Image (cartoon, rainbow over all chains, first blue to last red; front, side, top):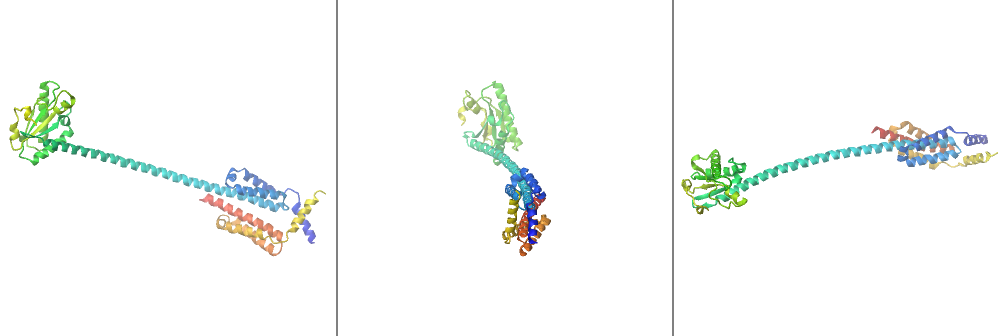
Length: 281
Length: 95
């Protein structure tokens, strides 16, 4: 009875008939083996499947061994899918992070650019403030030039006017507003504004230009609230040069406006007229 | 007859299994424990199949049907691993 059962087992296990399960295992393995995703993401599991299939080809119980081999192939297949999806998700996550990083970098660059721009704006206003201080210092320094006729303030013609023009430039306007402030602080003083040119051009043209310029300075001061009665203005053309007209630097010094500030009331106003070069400075 | 010697070998191999398949049973239990955390959720049916086969393997071993026990334990192990792999794939799709 027992021997009979054994014989049945032997016949079942060793029959050389093609086994359906083994066929399936082969097909599953070949499909997995042909899939690049499996080869890339589950090479170890694919190798286990290959060995299981090899065992199944010679196993006594091909149905059982074929089942094991087929399951091994399916394990490789599913794990490859899982790992591939995970890898893709990771890649997406990294890509999203990189995108975010790019965005933040762009924002940072923009913020830096804005900061730089506002620095430049600050630089610009710093420069303007420095220019104002420089002009104020210039006015204060020139104020210290004392002559017999009182205090004399010389403003460079190039600071106040464009060449050949009698309209006061912004830089000159600032200097004159400082002068106006000084005059308000010393309401007892009168001034004489004298315009000078270099020796280029005709004497008549220079005379007219120097008059118009002196007048422009006077008008500016009046506009700044100074009583017109306290200001005399006159043009003296190219006379009384303070430097040589032979070179550009000297001519620049000669193009000027002098403001004589009376030490006491009335003195400057009466100090004009017949001036001698040696009386100056 | 040429087919007798391998048939005889098969017979001997089958009859040689006289001790309990402890290693195979342990491997099946380990595979099931490893698969459970993901498989109970994403591959319940496959996990249950592995658990049933392990139970049948243990029963067979208790009844000294060692060859049945070994086969069932081997199948329980690959079934558990398949359940785990299937669950991993499912999890990776759903996230």
